[in-house]
Image (cartoon, rainbow, N blue to C red; front, side, top):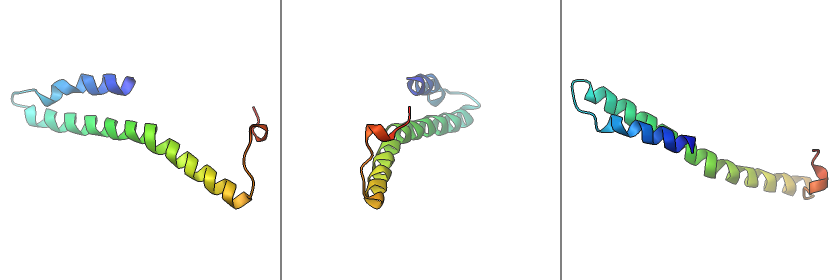
Length: 72
């Protein structure tokens, strides 16, 4: 939700006109697409990597991890 608010707040930088418009466009595009990339990485890639590494760990150790193995 914070990422969406950040991206929405930067959208006016993309439509600004005037003497410093080129600099504002560059900053706007970099910040918006950087935040989009980071959000996608955090939402989709990180859980997929967790599942892959968990599978590899179970395959190497020869046993599955259960709830009893976790220390709360």
